[in-house]
Length: 155
Image (cartoon, rainbow, N blue to C red; front, side, top):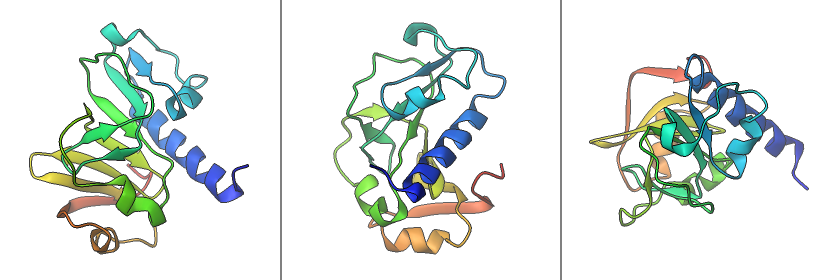
């Protein structure tokens, strides 16, 4: 049974993911956590015609190569990873490893939102009470944060 805190974390991840879908027609949802979005998204589609896809990730490299328990079909659109992992498990969520897996462009988790760029992991939004320095302490890889860093969910 999940705790109330975990349920709140998952609800936050799903709300933030739903924000990504605004005005996009052609959303594909992978198995697991993304399926919880199906009731709140109108424009679902098949994988081959998707404009945006969501997958649940188990871990991801700093370059955006993600592993998932549910292998998605071949997707030719931007992919956003979702994770319910909390801050205490951040170092096991982001792992330096080989580049096998699916390429995601963004990761949404309960405590932060990350993008993956040519220089590696970029924190875009962060939960109130945390700093990019807090996240960096848990990683061996560099974490980038820019002047556009926002409180999580404020877009």
